[in-house]
Length: 331
Ligand SMILES: [Zn+2]
Image 1 (tube, rainbow, N blue to C red):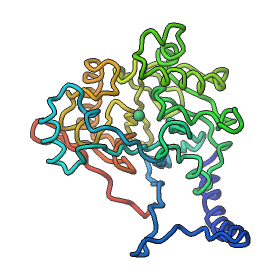
Image 2: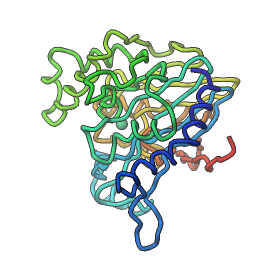
Image 3: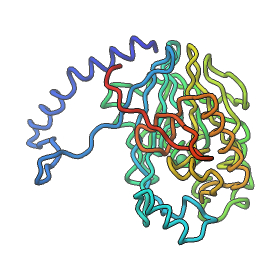
């Protein structure tokens, strides 16, 4: 789908759907407006952020949030040290909220989505992508390519439509590292994983199987779509890939889960999050990506950073700092 069609679809939707939806609900005797708190301020509504990389039009799409124990930030850190860190940065000491930011790129030739969120079966606070796509006027049929960083639940459990038991993006082609695909689909996978991760393996298999005949395996370093190149970043999972998206001398680094927290991953890249399967390998990948982003002054999108997760990585006092985009209305 062209960039032009992408714009037209959005405008057409915005002009017609809000009024039509409100009217339909009103006829049924249901008031569709969100319940108002005492202040009269409605619930959060936005999960869509537009930006450009060179000539490519891009968007960050929110699939919602995950709620995770704060200890997940660093499994190898003494409790008191973690609490000092959390307090210093005004982070909750119990459950932390981890955003889910999907990257959508319109190259002019293809509409490409990086990862698809977690669908309805992981956490209630996630799986918002289908509603968001409808709200901004993008049909699942319009997505030409799905690029998968890795096969964890919050990245691939949205691949199938639970009602139809079929691919949610019926016209898409799929790209994933063969190492990642083979790991989750290996016959003895359950013997390699602790019991608490067995559902991850079964969920990956269930979601990847219906699209298996439309998968192209990609290798680190390979430019598999014009302007899109895979970057090796194993550790979080064995075949985890990050990506660089380049157009007209501008580059976006799509980190996936090589970086998982906007402060911890940058201030303390050597910490080992509980979700990294191989902690030492993941630290090496994280440090490599952070150094590349800071040295080459790349734009960055962090899958689990605060929405929209788009910004830059700056060097500061022998470590690094997240510098988020100021919200840009003018595109
Ligand atoms: Zn994730």
